[in-house]
Length: 268
Ligand code: NAI
Image (cartoon, rainbow, N blue to C red; front, side):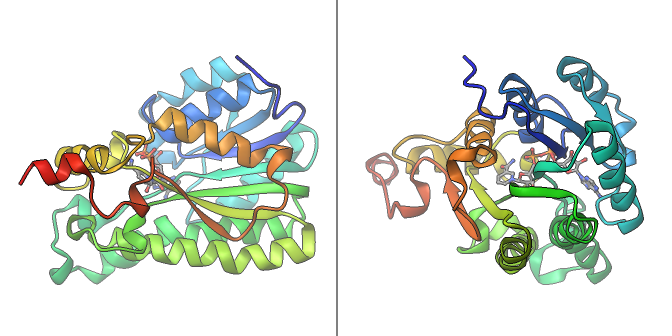
């Protein structure tokens, strides 16, 4: 069922890799809710070709951009405004990657070149996206920018490795840029702290299956799925959340405020 929540709104959606991606589900729902948008991903991710299917289904154009390259982002933002026929109302940053995680490097034995790459892709890219939007005056007033994060930014999950630090950095950028974007352009900036979700990025975390089941049993409402996350994100892009900004919003079925659940106690 569609509510036309995003009727006439224009945006950019980063990070739809395949149909499990949170960004993929968000793109499909944003389309159903009446939005038009440009899809983007890193040129290497495009080689898999999956994104073409999503572009067809949503009537979108694709513009490749490495989110760590300001040059690519300039091109993306300017072309998007041109293609969509006006300034933007929403942007989704759904990007994360740690080379240390990928290569199985322990948190206490990091390769710092990989650490830097990880924070550039996962955190600083969010600053670069917003700085490009801000400098080019590409957002409409009361627009909304969302990035996705995880609770390892606040509490320790040992296997989340340096992504925990990257997420803390990302959330801080949302608050800091949110101030200026709010003051200068009346644009809101938030992060959604999502439950563990079976996607390519999620499954890369060591012991992910156990992690997923534990969170499921600890959350009174159960884990939030990728589809649930798409639905929440669309509300943040809609006009019904205009004064929500500089927040880290937990979307996790209650996990973050649960000390222990009956199901978990019974395991002991
Ligand atoms: P995904 O693997 O489908 O999406 C990650 C995306 O980042 C991919 O599309 C990938 O191509 C893109 N990316 C990587 N490097 C890039 C670069 N240099 N430039 C542009 N794009 C680049 O996985 P998922 O889970 O949908 O991830 C989306 C976001 O949600 C990430 O920020 C992730 O950390 C976050 N998140 C995921 C959770 C999970 O358990 N899956 C839980 C909480 C947050």
